[in-house]
Image 1: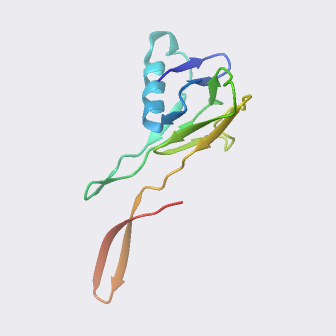
Image 2: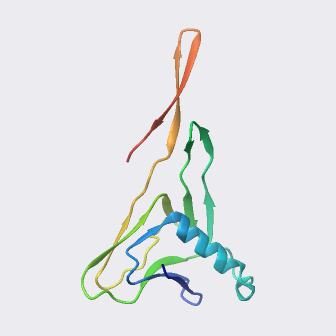
Image 3: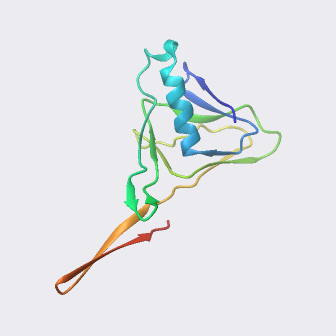
Length: 136
């Protein structure tokens, strides 16, 4: 998977043949890029939260927020219409705009997820705490 960066345009570039990218891969690539010596002068590109342990093998998903005008863009133009998927978490921006840049023959699908949630029910003097997964 090729994730590169265009610092002047604030674009996170996804390889034209990389049609599926996970939030975790995106987060890892951004953190690696931010840690490079020649990038220490730029404001943060993202914030990310998640992976809180809910018990029973359940964890909250990752919410990745692109900061300071950074966006995802496909690095090149696909030959025909191609769908690019971002999955396994939530991707948003700090200014409530689209996290992606339009491109010819590019169709974005951001597969937002909802993490497992704790559900409580009070039955008289007993409180029952359970876990369930919510889908959007």
